[in-house]
Amino acid sequence: MTRIVLFFMLMIGSAWASAAVLEGVGHANIRENNLDEARAEARQAAMRDLALQYRAQISTQDTVENGQLTDSSTTLSSNVELRNATIVDESQRGNLLRVVVRAEVGENSQGHGGTCQAGEASGLRKRVAVTGFPIVDPSQGGDPGLDDAGEKLPQALITRLQTQGKLQVLGATSLRLFSHLPDAPTSQSNMASNRLTNVVQLARELGAQFVVTGVIRDIGLTDPDAWGTSVFEKMQRGLGFGDKTRRFEAEVMVFDGFSGSPVFRKRFETSANWTPRGSGTAGFASAGFENSEWGRAVSGVIDEMSAAVGSALNCQPFMTRITRVTGDKVTLASGATAGLRPGDQMNVYRSQRYFDSLEGTPELADAGVMITLDSVHPDFSTGRIGTIGQQVNIQRDDLAIIW
Image (cartoon, rainbow, N blue to C red):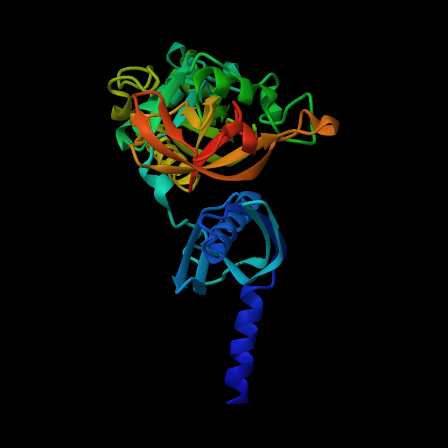
């Protein structure tokens, strides 16, 4: 019996060995003097604040009986959990209640492979801009059909993402975001931040929540002489000698359009027999591309890229900019094409920067109010926040979020 108890304690200890203690702040308006309801709402807002710190998906369920909070359970993604969440501070200013929640946040060893529990945001179509994938060493191509791979690859990726039907995909495949490809995506202006300063500008211009980009790091032949034109090389090729394999390695990166911070980054690679003419290989991602062994291998990698990007973005909250505030009426930069409908509710977060770090990632602070949409158009929507926007300092470029 002692061994069983000891084993159980070790399992719990291993599951929470990397736990961290964080504090989250939440606000809520006290309506009709119902302090318990406001406390539960502020507690949920504090949980969302913890989720923002971890950039994770959150699911919170509270049970209130006779005005008393009797039960609460919270999960951050499928392999991250909260433990011992308690309210450590509470203050009231007028009708605004502020609470501070402290909790242990750690990775659960019983998770399901790192996938997330998608919330309401998974049913909305986030807007994504896909840029070009420049080739680090263009001389590796050696075939006119591969010269435009930097634009054909993201175009093929766009087609697959659109087929998924879960994203609004914008093409900007002629654009390249990196000035020095071998070091991509590190920004030359701030080598320590690993953040692209032009991502935010591009996302704003295109109205995108995320920017998908990348580089083709390797597209070379294993044996460059295998397809030589000399008599000896042709003779070797006719006898079946020489390695005709061509490599393919590309790196995909996804950036948050509001902060420029990286959300996803992964390398994909393959190699297969290369035939330059007569089998569609000469036209990258063109009709007949998959008739060749190398074309089929590369096409399979692009399928993997599409699935990985879709999965990564499915775990992200839906965020849109506030474009106008008039009294209690708020206009958002997203509408019906994103899946929003009248009656939907969104949390409002203020975007803040500090004078000593103007180039840093903006901080998001829970404004303690929610927008209830009452009019939804294809590319914008309007709603009410239940109070005058100036009273809670809601302004243009603040964010509305659905988790």
